[in-house]
Image (cartoon, rainbow, N blue to C red; front, side, top):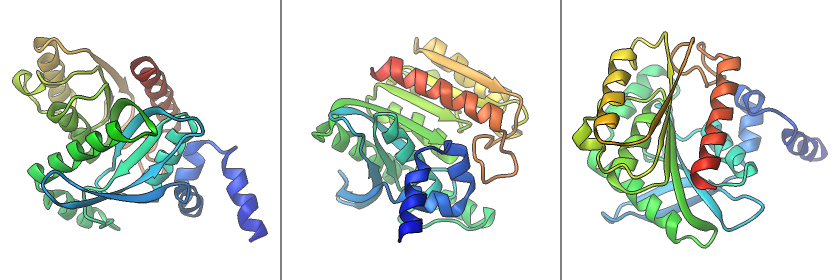
Length: 253
């Protein structure tokens, strides 16, 4: 128990990349979150993991996981956002399932019902706005699969800001016209899927709709911010994280 307490104390001094890269450290960091569930607008039971900052009320960040699901890495990110002063809620769009292989991850993403996922995210945003720990401001942040859903959530319901980490952005100008807050996008030059043509189309759509968009391109590959993957790029991941924090500070106060 003493060794465990020392480890938990030591986490506070470690960079988030070191925590995410070590499954044991990520599991301990994830313990800083608390499981929470609500009934969505469509009467579905949906769940997530929440981490609270030291000072409240505070702005909230709704985190949306990669195609692996709501694992310890994403819960650790919620804990990290809470350290930065945000109420951080990591939602689950896979009904409790976590993938152990790319094949499982692909199957899980393909099983997601878009209408139900949208309802889940809208319900959580509304729940956060009504939560006494939140000052009324909410942002969405997502990675890969979750990056696409971060902007989808912003289209479906008003939020103060959105951060997309290499998520699918095929939306048209007509679709993004309901986006109410600024959007920040992190994309990779070597990404063969979320590539320049797709992101360029999104940039054009946002411009046509008169919506503020800031894009950063990194000389990296898809999922460059995930320390557990082969494409991890430490320098670019840190740059994206710093830019994300500055963007949220400007958008949420």
